[in-house]
Image 1 (cartoon, rainbow, N blue to C red):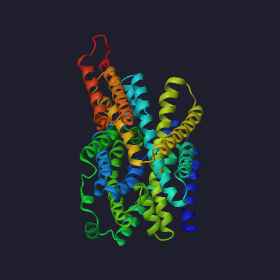
Image 2: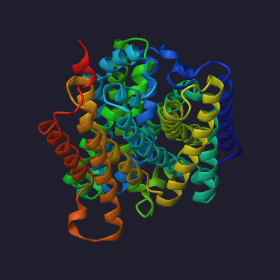
Image 3: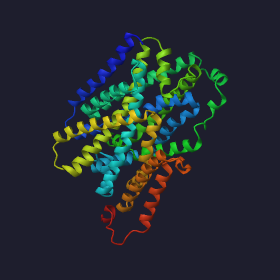
Image 4: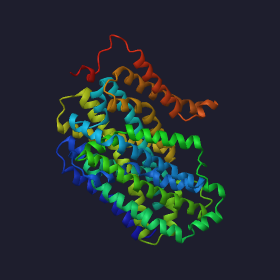
Length: 475
């Protein structure tokens, strides 16, 4: 790393803060702060989808797993593409129409309007827990990049990453994220696909060379383990359906067609970036076989093989990918705290100025909490899988019912969410304190089974005194 490379990275970090300050003066209410005024077109929506889902696990994590396991690492990005496609095809336009009709700001807004306030609370808690885990995974990846760039410890790097992301997210809100995400996605595609992949090929990453010099098991698509791969695809696909930022993206679109076409466009870009990261990881496995931590592989590849100037630019692209995912995760938790808890249950008459202040404080708290989680766990993909499991297992069944089944009841929805959340958290806890073989099963499956069982039983045995749903009460 030369002075030029350090200058590029430092300039990028300062520019992110400048975007946050600029955006602060472009918004006048919470509609601007959380959903960008509901006026974004297809390209902006596609960029936001990319920025939200293509982050540390997609780039840093996929390259690291490819280094350690081989092409099976591509399954993470394929799972993202599948989930994005499903949401675009079946949910995006309908969610946009529901959001405009109810003037929703958050996912729990829809849940309460469809069910009741207690179901909203469980949805809010589940969303906040999962998005803190998502943010933690991205902050851990950011720290890994900064660690390689500056030679700092992981803790020091994590502190800097957390402070930068929290600052521009808290100050600028959704508009700051929109401004920064355009730049971040351009840098990511430039760094990983346009520059990174050709350099990998020039340094021994040709198909023939990889096939000849890497062990055959590196080309086994199932090397990750088919049970883990299936759980990954199912949990990520379900997380798209219930993830609050999926709903926020749809609310922010200027029309149902923009809400639908944005994620369709993002699908292709996700596959391209995931494929490039996996290819680079395979090449790094050939060049750096003795690297202890897979998550360090991609930053090390760039630091050692890229020329001066490009090195800083591409590291900025990686940092951009990670930060662009962390920021929306933090803003999501802020919206949960400010709108779904404070405004809904504590101070319904809160002024816009009060909500802005609470939102900024909530963003800071969410970012710090995620930073602590990243410091404790450090492995990017493992952290994110906790969030996917919590979100998918607890929320997917009631959410589909809320959107497509007008005659469902709030009682089964509430108890289904609670059962799924409690089972997943309990299962994760038991895995920490026991080696019983049953707890080697991915928590997704028992959580989803518990949620589905409670939901079905609740409808089959609905008490005669249960009040009608809102839809049933409508003439």
